[in-house]
Length: 519
Image (cartoon, rainbow, N blue to C red):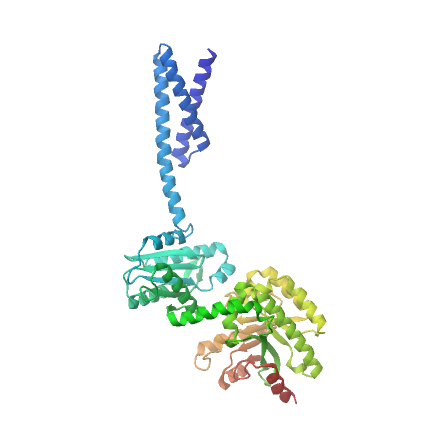
């Protein structure tokens, strides 16, 4: 009797669990697989027991009904399990091969594409990099940046035609593949993409603008394999960025080989440049616009390479930042500048001060920056405001609270703070009231062609006025002729810098030139 009670109780529990599984699937399209497996295993055991029971005892109608019910439930669950796993596998395969945010094919999909496709004639790779996307991420937040990526993918999808593929291969990088196209058609595609992304993206009542840089590689002239094409398209994209962004560059084998070879050598030699005393400083003066008297010096890093001669920051700073070498290099610039300040004071050249040095975002985030700054100020006996740090808007805005604290502590040490390349990074000037800064260094693009373009003059005038109203010093960089200087005088701009006034020069030439000026 106890056996039958246990048996039918177990059957009832299985039926209840089966009903729960069915209802769960109907309403949520999901199944609790713990219950699922329990029911399958239990029913299997019960079917075996019921079969044995029927063989050794005269079966009743209830026994047959129980057995048939168990079989139906068992087969139904097995069918569901098979179909559900099939759907899950399809979903898993899709998620594995596609970007979860944009639903575009991802790098794994691309790897399979590269593996399956034999090298074809006239297949083109357009490597698309979104310009300054990291800044948009920092300014507008990750959520709106993700929305922007989705909108970009949707807009580019509208351009898709037969024999074209669009991949998302990294955070801000896309790859547009065109099969059976010639060079001229490929360049037209690049122009289409640039034009499509030039229109603003509206997100929560804000218009967000973004540009892109595109590198193009075409078979067979730019590579024998699809993997080579991908690498060369990436190299060409880097060239497009160096040419000013928001354009495209067709892979040039000789030019890119020279650049790649140079970068490899720079990467190797950079680690020993400091130890081998190959780093040098050049100095560019800033001037008072009204009197044209010198009002400060900017220290600019140069690398006297044993094979390639004098290298400028554009040749090695990006590599230095990627490798972390920018940190010891900046501290060397800081100490050398402080040492030079001490020498100038001993030589009676105080009129050259303050001296400005550029601080990259990576160095600005370093906790040791305050330590070394205080150490060198004390070691070389600098006075208040002998030293100025120039940081970019994007650096200041990456972590506004950190920037506030860091700028305040630096000012307590007597260091002035300047926002470099002002106007090209952050679009909301409200951050200016939050930061402890002393100078706005207005980017050279705002004075370029100012003598010909009225709108440029209006914008520059308002930026100078904004600085004065905030009790900040406005310094315009990039002055190239007398007309531009005269316009700055009309605008009551306090300071200016540019090749027309003084080019960067070595220390001996600087002291010789401006010692005479002082006399």
